[in-house]
Image (cartoon, one colour):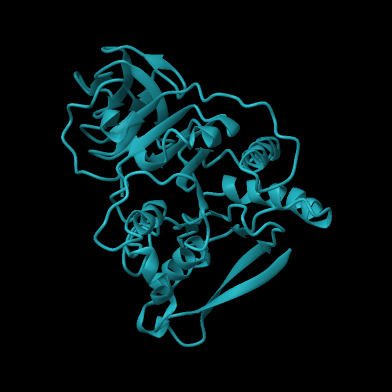
Length: 353
C-alpha cells in the first residue's frame, strides 16, 4: 500500500490541510480501476471505519498478489470540514466560510478536461482546491464510491439511472434496503463524476455507461459507527470488488437486490409545518399505508389544540428520520420511498442541501 498526502494550502497564513491517499497497485492493467472516499461530510464516519477494515484485507491481498485492478482510497476526504467546530459542535457538512455544502458545486466538466482540474490551483480558495483534487482522483477510475450516511437511516444509495440496473450488484453486496434513482444532473460529487463520463465527447451525451459506476452510498445513520457493522459492510464491499474482478477471490454466489428502486420523484419528504417537539409514531424500516399517523408536533405545550398530527401521504417504506426532537418550521422529519411520485412541489435535483 502506497500512502501519500495531498497538501492543500489554507486561505490564511500559516495554515494548510493534509489529505491522505492510499493506493493499492493492481496486477492487471485491463481490470477496472476503483476509487473510494468517505467523510466528504466530515461528521459522517461509518464509511471511514468501513475503509479501515477494508484496507486491512486489501493489504493482505496485495501481499499475496491478489489485487487485479488499481484501488485508490481516501478514508477522510474533508480535513477542512473536520477542523470546523462551533461551540463544541462539529460543523462538517457546510463550509463555514462560503456557507456551501461540501458535497455541492463540484466542477461539471468533460472527462477530456480532467487535467484542467489541478491547473492553477492557487487561483481557488481551499475548499475548491479540495473539491478539484478529489474529482481529479476519481476521474482516473472506472468505479467510484462516495461513502456517506444519513441521520437515522436504513442502508440505501443514490444511483444515476445511467448505471442502473448494472449497479444492482453493489446494492445486493451491501444489503441495501432501497435505491433512489436520479437523473444525475446536480453538482454533487458522484454526479459530477457521472457528468464527466456522459460528456466524455463534448456536446454528445451518453445515456448508458456500461462498466462504470459512480454512486453515493448512505451507510445507515450518523450513530452507526460500530465495529460489527463496519466489518460487515467491509465484507460486502469486498464481495463487490471480487465480483467485478478487481480483487482475486472465489466469487461468491450472486445475490439479488430485493429492495425498492425508485426515482427521486417518488420520495416523500415529511416536513414540520410548525416548530416544536416531535413525537414519532413510526420508525425507519417500517412500511406504512396512506393515512397512517407518522408524528405529532407539540407546538404549544399544555394549551388546547397545541399539537399537530402528520399522516402518510401515500404507501411507502420509511428510509430516514431526523434524530432531532426539537424541530424548526419546514424542517425535514422523514423520507419515505414510495411507488408513486410525490404530489409535493420541490426543486428539481437533489433532495436536500
